[in-house]
Amino acid sequence: MANTHKILLNTARISGLFVTVFFGAFFVGEGLPDIIAGRAKSFLYFLPFTIPAFTGFVIALFRPVAGGWIMITGSLLLMSYFLLHNDITMSMIYGLPALLIGICFLASKSKELI
Image (cartoon, rainbow, N blue to C red):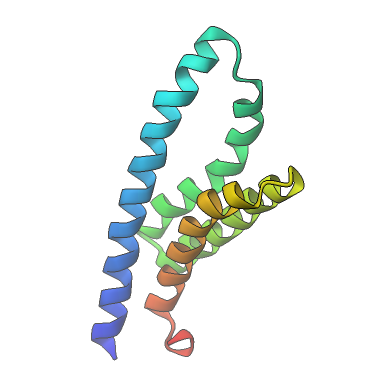
């Protein structure tokens, strides 16, 4: 059973790294030029909803349970932002990766979740 916990923890860490790098590159590549050009109003409204999910990943590297809960909370905030704007597809694209990775972090430390 301990091996399963290590696999879940490493899966969450590797997946979280991929997701963080991908979305970070997307934000820099797509958002930064728009911010500089002064046409990033909708991006700036969206950005605060992404911060908890990414902060949760950094915290989860050292404290998996706390970081997992922060990632789940951040992903639910992000998903609710897009659902309020009637965009279910974007809600799933942006929210599900952090939600699933947060669940993996929680499951890696808790025998009850497995």
